[in-house]
Image (cartoon, rainbow, N blue to C red):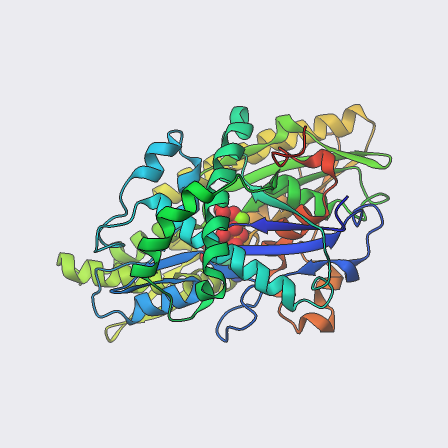
Length: 449
Ligand SMILES: Nc1ncnc2c1ncn2[C@@H]1O[C@H](COP(=O)(O)OP(=O)(O)OP(=O)(O)O)[C@@H](O)[C@H]1O
Ligand SMILES: [Mg+2]
């Protein structure tokens, strides 16, 4: 049996990872949980978040924050970093999607398929996890680490099929990582000629990666249900990330916790979709931007600052931004008036109501008075997510109580103030490392179900 479990959360916007000793779920001690500092060496970013980004430059490929920096510095404004590529893994015809060429805005050399760029990023991610684990005093000397990854429940009927495909891609990434080692982590990136000679050799050498699968919302629910033994028996979790919004529920009977599969909903609209809504709202109000060039320049500028714009407008209800000497303003109310946003909210509320009905029915059937609701992922900061989990259903039946997403231990001095602000985003990796085996969606190939 492995001593530790490490969970990788390959996110649409940010990748995260955490480790915990085996059995930590039943005898929970927050001091043993190790969220990994994947960006610990970077200055401008939270140490626990690794940007999921790839940039194909003239002669090199860069990853993570360095990819975004180089893309912003590039004089050719048509060149874009590749982001949000995780959502590709959710399409029904995966092989075909992976075999398409990267768009020329991403790969002007026209040599890489989407599959290549995903494999390269995952190799970078695996090497980054390796470095962070070695640098962690609690993990450095651990011999046996079992690995898991968190993914949305994209294709509910075929999670095992997706698992096999994803392990194949991770397997290639691991073979490439083993060949490249720390060269993958060079801030200036990896030379394209090195990649084109080594990458074709990685695929034949690849073995399926040994990794279990846990659904993202299940992982988040597993963490948040710790310590709930007395407080409550039922928990509904909303995970709004960049690419997907997942809802899941957990019920607890005595010492065992189990998922209520009928309460699980995944939909493919989340932070990225809201970014698009916000950019369109600003573009519509900027009447001076008439020419396609002006519009493209404004769109690009908005997308570069979107994280700040969104944070400000979610927190303060409005944001002001500067572009080419002009001041543009945006309010939460402008966003709420947008039709795409209204549709999104309708779908989101419907999904939550459907899931909550399942949880409350289960609580009622077991004679339990209360359901706890919690929001995780970057979307936990959104006012409409907070409002939804705080809503009290009318009529009789179990109450719904919203719980904060960030536990007290995330404020421990050892995290230097860095963990608490991003804890909702880390909850999936942490819960994935802690979850007992019976919460897994699929096992590593060598471990029979
Ligand atoms: N404080 C904040 N206010 C508003 N939005 C935020 C905040 N923090 C993060 N976000 C948004 O949350 C998203 C990232 O969240 P998260 O890290 O949970 O996503 P992810 O795991 O990469 O995506 P997914 O789970 O869909 O694959 C981005 O859209 C980001 O702009
Ligand atoms: Mg996520």
